[in-house]
Image (cartoon, rainbow, N blue to C red; front, top):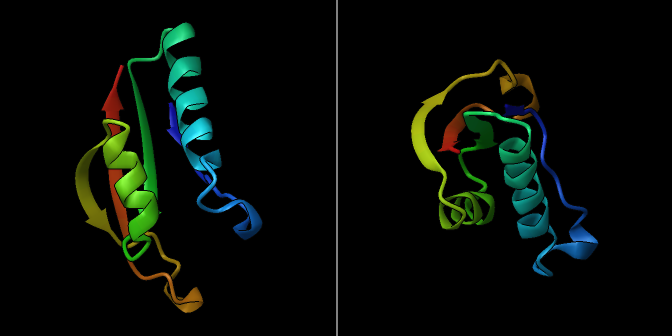
Length: 82
């Protein structure tokens, strides 16, 4: 299963909403027979990267997804086997 965009409104930052979303995604994947959850994150989004690592996601690689004109040059790819 691939998560293309995971975002939390800034008003809810630091309140556990991101963790709840990640937990829901992982549970949903398991319940529906997925073998892994994959996602990407802007390489400078340290809070999100820390969250994914705490949730058991493993770093795979860093790549250019073509969003440089928006100031988003490189993205870290993460995966969690289910």
